[in-house]
Length: 133
Image (tube, rainbow, N blue to C red; front, side):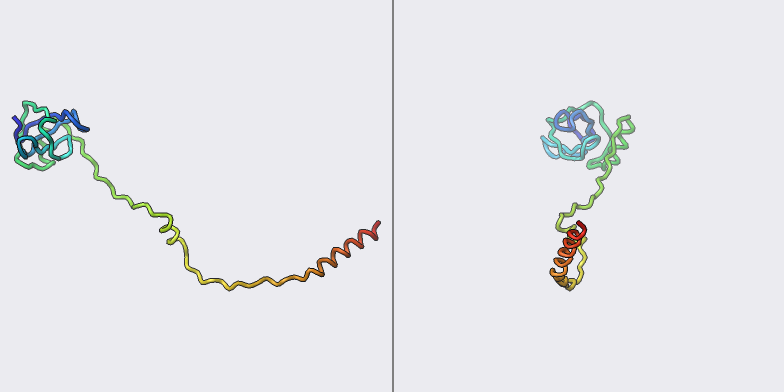
């Protein structure tokens, strides 16, 4: 009863309840299906055949299967192709890109200020405060 063009319902797996069309018979236990399901090999125990039969050739393309299903008013939702995203960069790679190579700056030691004048200023300010009293 399972033959090329037979419309079936998937009864097992993540695609259960969806319409599948037999595109090729692999052996006694497996067939190749397409339609509202992914185009792949399927165990015939996971299919519930109906009495409807499509006129398609062996290994018919996905577009041919979809056009035949539309003729009998079964819609197939088209999947959008995945867009390739840029791979995330590691922190090390990002830091390498952002760092600019600069020549090392010559280091200059600051001149040491003499501490004695600072002390003298303090003494002077103390003397002034005493004289004001």
